[in-house]
Image 1 (cartoon, rainbow, N blue to C red):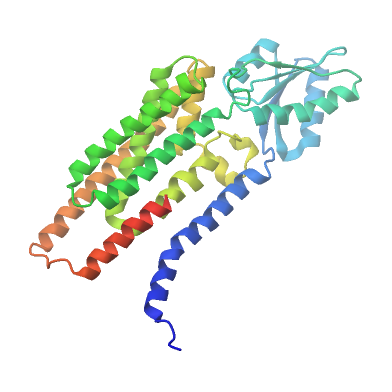
Image 2: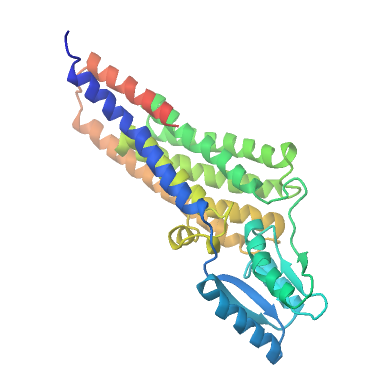
Length: 350
């Protein structure tokens, strides 16, 4: 019996490398970011100016260790301001009869639950039930506040999946044409995201124009980066896009867990990654009166600028390659087969 040829088998194994790397990367990223969320310097406050309040705050800090960053605030009004500015995750108002915990679940339902888990036993130790007041609740259509994360997922998939189509099917087009198509696709993706967020699922009861603008900035940045990368990475573009805009992006966005509930790596990415800019920007507009919105929009604009620069550089490289190969040899059957396989791999990789 004749043994199978090694060449075809090696070819198949090389093509299987991309999905296997995706499997490994997704498992590492999602499990390390989401499986065991724990507070790390989670900011909370104790309301009061007397010695008893300061002593109580010091006691909480000593017991919590590195898990909490405990501070004192002079009044309940200051605590509300700090919560609506996303400076703290919870504020405890001591009272002998009805101690109160202030939270802002629109900022992070999980952070609010973590703060409640910290202070409920302390109130119980005083023999008093804890009253929880939500100063920034989510809309009834999105009770956990995680709808914005799934909006991020939808817009992201529409964006990076389109990169595979533009790279595989649009390779014969000039870079200027591909960049124009990327901008147009971003418009379509952002409109779909806005319709889902507004009329369909009612995540956004106001500010739909702002949701659309941030969706377009976010999507256009991903698409232009992908179009530019395809010139250099070819069949590995899909894997690169998955790493940048799924593995590192979804996990650091703050849509499920804010950075104080994650390890230092993903928490640090939250400060400048584009998914965090999108989620926090939309959240700021919908629930927190635009607090910090300029910084989040600036993050999205910076990523868009990187995409535009990368696309411009890729266009120059392609023109130089074309000049070097002024008289290219006609494509062989093997070349055409490889291009078709590359296109198939990119499509499957999405």
